[in-house]
Length: 466
Ligand SMILES: [Zn+2]
Image 1 (spheres, protein in one colour):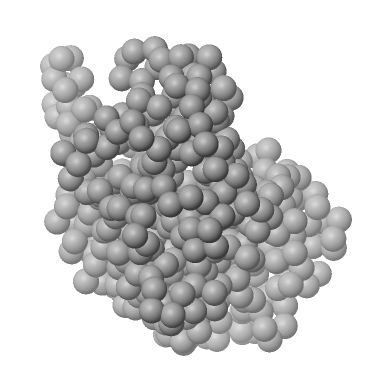
Image 2 (cartoon, helix red, strand yellow):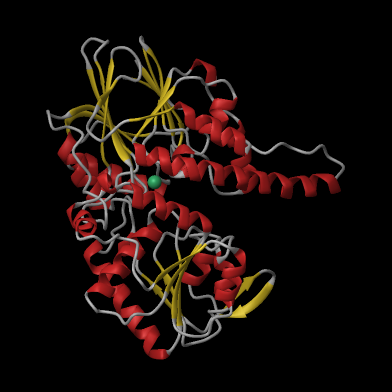
């Protein structure tokens, strides 16, 4: 048996790993590379394995860096089953089509440039139709249910505590001797996250033989999730007292719903005044609808919300904005309000219009609830640049910028170590993926110190015998 790391090895996007056993060729995740447009574009067009030779895919969750190349895999000849939870399937149904739309816009942008240089146009990575067709291949599997992606292999998806529907993957390769117990913890969430249950063990029957572990936040520490509600409440109160607006750039899937849930609780407990909340992003609105459809993924607290006749995301102060006309009206609003909008790193979308109308006034605030990668507008806000360029024009930053990193949906350094301890013994082979070097190096050292001496940092294209 062997495994090849085809993406998210020594980097944080493009999760894709091929496991080959005598019984079949199995792909775990099929994610999109994100980042620098030209580099990502090239990597996304190249599969390092022939799609028509892959027998099945097991999908951990709907985030595009894990699912985004499924339409292309299918368009290039993959014809097998894709195993995922039903919430992941439903989120994919909106996210893959949204991704196709972005691919189309990207191709148009590139083609305008190519036309100027007299070059041939390029096709988008995939079409909306590709994004729809691949959905037929998804086989929904409930948490904890057994499935057999290829003969001789028994699979099980367990709670990841990351986003709705996200799963850690356990695969038992029974067709090889000795049988191999394999676990995949990418992306691993955190205990105590709002709405979702805590990450579950992949090894309730003894240590795994192989563990593939993410390392995004190796060497870093998050604030506890419990603190974020109090921080958010404090921020809302300050802004309302000043008569200002609070703008929160948030990823459409996961972060937006966590913020909404926290606000809902703060409203009910009367810890904040009833200020209107606007969710201004069509994808966020659609994703929130999918969250409403899947109470089977909720933890006890969120489930009791539903039992009491409420919905986690419905409150008289909450308003969902889909149309552009409504969004434009909202941009002109002067009275206190909370506006949650995408994109998460402030690189595109409606958030830019809101920021432009917010940052120049000291009464207002921007709430940062997610990771802001280098060279993004979001990062420049976190770093408090004096002036920020939006749509080609410079704007002075006079408003409050509040960073709340308790909202992270990834395990931090200690969380990763604790999880590894709970599923891996001294003989377990651990492969670190999904992390840049500055994150994997401290995690590797700490794992070895704890007796996990059989730990390897993977690199793209690397093949290991299992
Ligand atoms: Zn994720």
